[in-house]
Length: 381
Image (cartoon, rainbow, N blue to C red):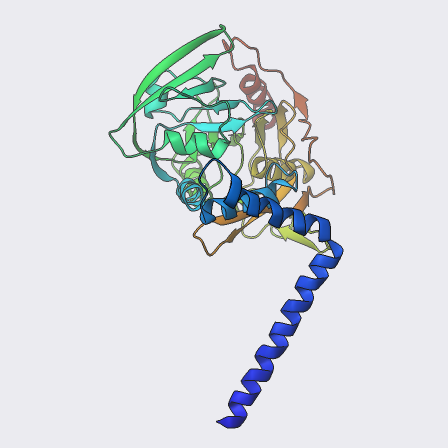
């Protein structure tokens, strides 16, 4: 027992020595920065007119560390924000049924209201800019705050104020929240061309790959389709693995889907697995097709498996990893850059469609879909 205690004492002495050495190294290499940090902390605690609490100060410092990366995709998620994100990835939450994207000007734009949800029924439109929630301006809110404010218990009321650029007017909507079950797939057979299926993939979450597989099996089996149009327009991405699994539905076993590289130069190549569906395929994309959508579109284009129609995609070629933290929150950190099978880096560039078709502002006719139908006809008949 005496020898055990002695050994334990030596162990902790070594650990303490290492910790002290690290602190001294930090002070020596970043003396000004470290002393400034503790000076600010002390002044806030003792001189500020406004009350502060330790948890708030620590959270603020944590957010500041991540913000210093100047990476719009890396962020500290407090416990509430992380809970909201988990709900989104699990595809079930209380809300009004919209996707929100923050643009380069910091505006919170609604992207594709989900069909048959409260927002859709109220008349919210794609492109509406959120300027107020329950009478409070969203000007200084983060995207996470806007999303959290719109979510809530089913049956509760939300007052949403939007600005619609198409007619230069503001609108107020009173919407009652509901449980939003978010199917990622909307599938049908096109009336315009017999034998052609159409799948709208809205996002990539944990159930998306299975939903895609089920929809494909139905279209191929019950409807006996001969060609498919896959619509990735306004799909801002989501779960990385879902994009690889969905790509595997269309690519041959072993074909490259995407490669990723970290800051140390370590590269991982992700390949398709399983049995592919071998029918003509056209993919629709636009400027809101991002992240996982670009992984899927890039894989299908580079492997010459599909023709892309529409507009230049968003250009998000970075992969984020989520690390859960002791306080119940999480760190979403950019850890890898991805490349299409041809080795193309699309970050801040996007993917150029094989056929560039600009969508008209009046939305009277879906010219992009019409072009896709034209291309499918040529391959089937």
